[in-house]
Image (cartoon, rainbow, N blue to C red; front, side):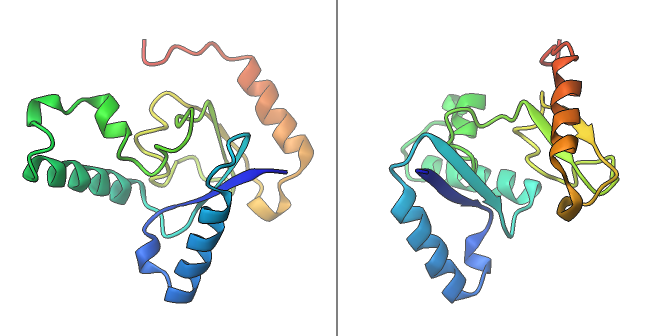
Length: 145
């Protein structure tokens, strides 16, 4: 399959050899747009928001942007998920029995539906995915309203 691969996170913190491998894979798959595989490596939701704010501040400093032009849409364009046609997940499945997001996709998950499981990721089965989807189908999404 033609799958676009992207790493979400601070890749510059990883060993140089791994950075090079990530760059090669991302470059090789950059034109694929049917399926997306996003790997959160060296990722933190707060770090993502700080990185987006820094990029915007740099644009303001260079005179490319005025502070009054900053809005949610512009901010989203500077997040790690800006390459996705739909960066906000509809459903987030959290394994390991933890009932929290642990900083995962803080901005993008604002209106996501959450499903928590007591199984760890390696033990995640097809039936677990089915249950999460069935739960999601039974919900009425309000998007903050």
